Amino acid sequence: MCEICGCSDGAEVKVVNLETGETLEPASKHRPGDLHHHAHSHDHEHNHGHSHDHDHLNNQQDVHHHHKDHHGREATVLLERDVLAKNATLAARNRTWFAGREILALNLVSGPGAGKTTLLERTLRELQPIQPFFVIEGDQATTNDSLRIKAAGAPAVQINTGSGCHLDADMVARGVAELKPSFGSILMIENVGNLVCPALFDLGESAKVAILSVTEGDDKPIKYPHMFQAASLLLINKIDLLPYVDFGLDRCQAYARQVNPAIEIMMLSAKTGEGLVTWFEWISAASCRERAGTFPQLLEALP
Image 1 (spheres, rainbow, N blue to C red):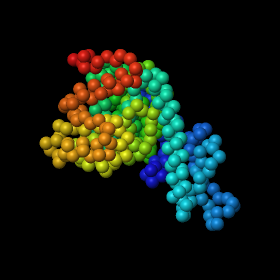
Image 2: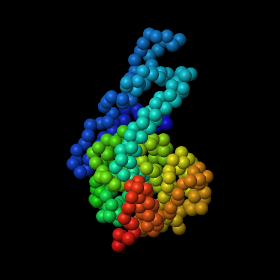
Image 3: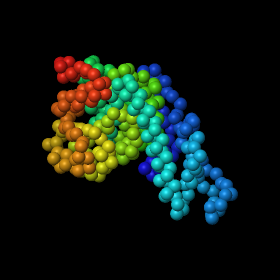
Image 4: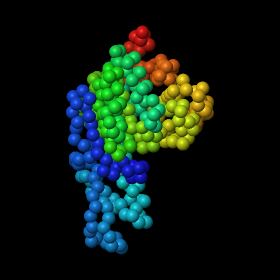
């Protein structure tokens, strides 16, 4: 997990509010309940004499030793469980907050270059005049994508994760506090481009939407099964390029259903617009379920 990829090792998270231009302090500064890490030596007995690291969760009594010896692997697993458990608690709070305000929160996940931002731009330009959208953009660096989203007409917050390879529930809570999405709105969370770690971290979203472009290869669902198991919907993007690449649509769908029989699958092109109506209908139905009331039929309002 993140112990291996390095995203938990001193990553500084920066939140940029595109509406105000304000940059918040790095989230890596310790707050009550934060995970923190320090090294020290001590003289209690471990049958070996060396300094080693301790990983703590503030306000908790359990201390898991992280040794570079025979029990180091077990300690790392315990630490990872602590990290995921803490994130799950925060995600549950986010989900309750969204539900109380009838906000549909979608976590858009993919590898780099799958077309998440282009699809989001197209979606916002078509639907923002009908239904309020708010966007959290996740990238390791730059505000490039959030500036594109702002130009498309939606309020946006950029979260830069530094060396981190995914968003987590606390980052989303910070972003939401800046965005202040309105009652009954739709929150789009564009996660960091990565098919591994974002699958493990619940953000409190209503659904994960995986986006896979035909240029990436049709075997991604079985190469990265955790991501496609976690997704409710798979969007196969850039189908306008099918004549030029070796990509089997039927094969890709079979692989996706092999790892997740319940996954919904749609094919579209964010560039040409092919298949977007089906995607818009899916958003409409999902938002209707969240709001437990009437939602304007998007297609009727489209030109």
